[in-house]
Image (cartoon, rainbow, N blue to C red; front, side):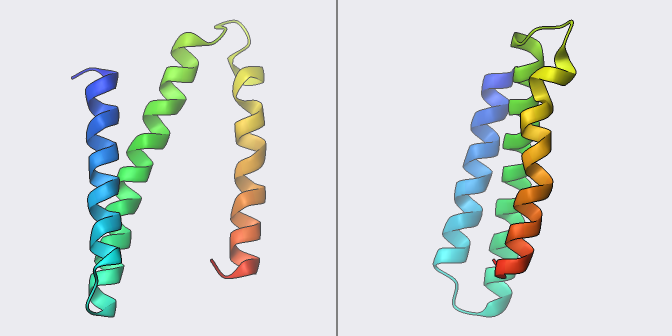
Length: 84
């Protein structure tokens, strides 16, 4: 299975999880939908990072991915403080 197929499957899983959360009738359905969407989002993230490493400069891969890595802790901190 190639990167394109994996990316499409992860996107489909994310959309299905979002649809479950959107049409939820109870809190349990929201939690399940968010879990499924989280699995899809993890797939999207990992495939995108691998594509960046594959197509980016091989000698300075750390410098190529460092902007992404520096924003992850900031995002998690802000989401926690804002209660999102």
